[in-house]
Image 1 (cartoon, rainbow, N blue to C red):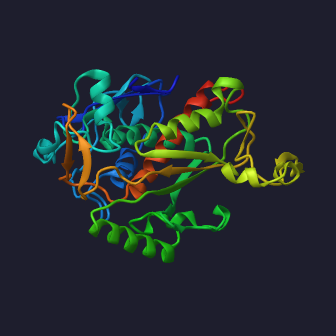
Image 2 (cartoon, helix red, strand yellow; image 1 turned 90 degrees about the vertical axis):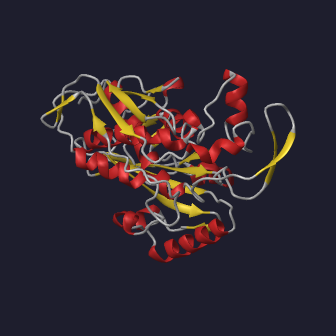
Image 3 (cartoon, one colour; image 1 turned 45 degrees about the horizontal axis):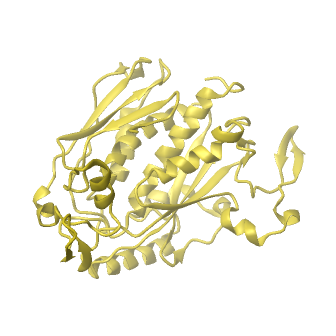
Length: 357
């Protein structure tokens, strides 16, 4: 399946080292003003080669819209776009075209389809996520018109973790540094740590925290269309994601029900909760409180240390990767997390019988 969403629906196409990647957005409401510069800004936050701790593949990632927009507004027709690939170095993968890279999709793609594009992983590459950022940036602008705001930031890299409550963090400082951690002091530590890992030819993972504010009560549906379930699916569809936790998450197992329950109260004639361990979603439906969740990313699978693996013939071989790769994907994942969250939220907003665009 190369499509995501029910009403606001994104279909993506393309491979990492093909001529271009791109997508089609269907179901976008008509007559909505779209700031193309803001879409490009979000792409720039994800693009490769943006800092000393990201892959040095140089892609401008300039989006070219082919349809669905006229005089700066949506037409209600399919929005088609492409992002050219201009800095492919496919020769970097020639030496491993018959080998299965550890923890990559090489083996599973080969077994499932009997063929694979070994150049940068082809369709399994995180390069595809640029298309999600285009659609997510458009969704975020539509959501902003309804007062819904989505902000993600790097909360942890390896053992370095931001322990402050997100209410006490100045989220306007997320992009003040290349690691996208809103704490300047911790960001410096993270940057130096990632640089040290890069020098070792290794990689490291981390956690992106996301907060959604302004969500109305009533998004999501019981049983199989729970809002939290769709957010989890969206996050797990991102390359390298290994964990998702909403609200109190795994920490809730250490609490008693009397400690964890979010008691209700009336504030300014509105029903609110005194605490928010639920993460803004109860019974799969938004309750009007902040939605917040963590997304865990594993260490990047491509490292420059020698590793043991096997080739297509089953021979045991030693391999060493070449090319340009992130030592830590987490900083570039921030706009991807925001975009996937936006796709889910807008889709549910459009499906809701209690909220109207």
